[in-house]
Length: 382
Image 1 (cartoon, rainbow, N blue to C red):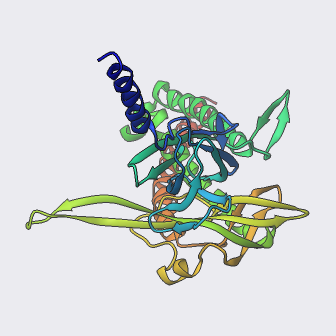
Image 2: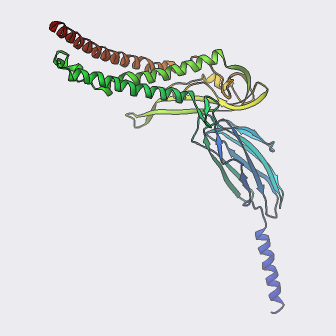
Image 3: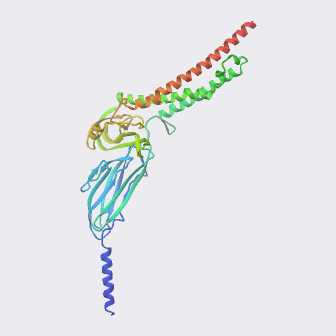
């Protein structure tokens, strides 16, 4: 019996060792050097797959899900690398010997239109034979890119748009003070009853609002038009290599039908591309499509046949802003957005602005009438 006991212990240890044998991936890591990613810049993601087990993980599946707020612009040559643009993922098969590690890296480009969003990518590693799985995620917030526009005063950069906004606010304040003084003069005049009651009851703030707010919308439309004009006159042309692409699909509204199903009433398809191009004497990687706002209503901004033709690896013309080469477009000029924004930012503000000017003219007519009465009264005394 005493001889049997060591044999049982040795047998148990052997079975335990056999049971413990296998692939182990739990010590794998994913890292990057940046805490936050400025829009339009790239971040390198480093992956270390560690097999700390005593069995070689041959034929391990690696799947990388690409971010919705960015693009894949570079990846190491992985064995049997496959890319699925529709599913937005990259997959590969590789061997990780026992007790060793496999290193690779890839670069992600943060979209210029997704400031405040998370640049996130999921990685899944599976060894199917033993059902060993390792999952991890890379996620960094996209921040505003450093601006090169405007002027620097005291270490602070003032963007031209901030100057226009400040000027507009100052004009609003001065106009309010002036109109309020004119209306007070009308109300407190001894012959104010000779002026129409509608003029006497005019609110100063209301007049300022119906004049200055439409002007703000017209200024926004003018800024869009000026920017698009610059793409035709002063922006530099180059040739861009498409590194990645994505199509944003937005449903603005859904409606319930009698059959109990929901049907989207407005679907917008807006593409965006990751591009590599030469700006002057340096290579630039950035994202872009068109200038101006990215809000559209029920439109397919780029034709399906054209979008299908513009695939990764294809070279297409592009135009970049010489003052900030990271701003790039592949469609320039006055696009379809003016059909949309021309109504809201142009026609309707013009109608409201004309009404505001009529109110100002009525106030001026009331003041002139009171001045005429005052002159008649003074001439009668003389």
